[in-house]
Length: 381
Figure (tube, rainbow, N blue to C red):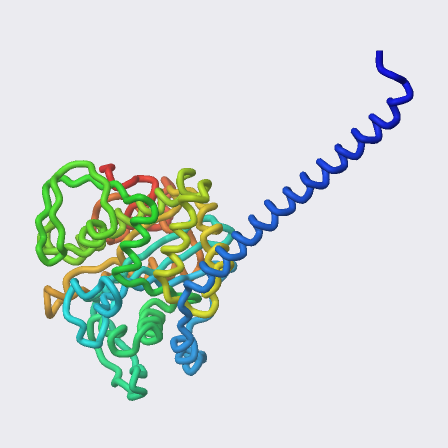
């Protein structure tokens, strides 16, 4: 039987032990929280510092503010995505000789509807014949206004010249821009553990550094870059066919990033964010991790079937079959719908020319454009 005289001392000692343990538990918890916060802050600062800011384009565009289109309606956003074919930088030299110039290898106008209703990515052919305005070059000299292929604008005057050319063509104001090079694209694909595609026939393209068997397979960085850049050895060898393939691949990439396996897994999400922030040069309005996170969050809320890809309606240029020209009034119909933040409907196949959709009453309905959505994946159809 326990001596009643010892009970108070025993209880007091037990109380001290409990308080001692609680203090250590509290200290341990504090250390864990502070460590997690420290790692979180370190990661945030690292990712935020990865982003390269382009202030030159913003300064140049301010000179022409009076001639630029009005902002998008309903708080919609228009972002210009430019894939640069520069050979400078680590890992890019193998794709050709660095001649000190660069052109836009891929240009996509991304329209994000207000309140996340949808997103439409419109590919602009690099060989599209357009009116390029007077632009300021890197050496501060000025080019003459001229009628030339679209991707020359990037070589003449960089991002600002490309934006002004597209705004004059479409009357759509570009709110933000992102430029990514070959190396950045490869890192993005590797960060999501590759993207699955299906090939109807094998590919052997020496210029694109690509050799693949037919069938379903997952492409990683180098292979993925070759796949979206190859032209002569795949399909009909046209740039239009290449743009269709790029849209298919980007749709599959969006699908992969939106999957739970990436967004909900910190060990997978961090490499994606690291690759993305290292890869891009943006305007000051998108040059922080917070800005990019807000953009990604708005895209994540859009169902993949509402993320659409299409090429601006085009056909071979009348005076040179190796160049492109817009199909009218189809192109203007597309631009008008984007300006008004109206839905754009796409269907597989075709050449980009819109088809009128009947509503059974004889009244005209919204046109339907040839394209695809991200939900289709790269192994459908």
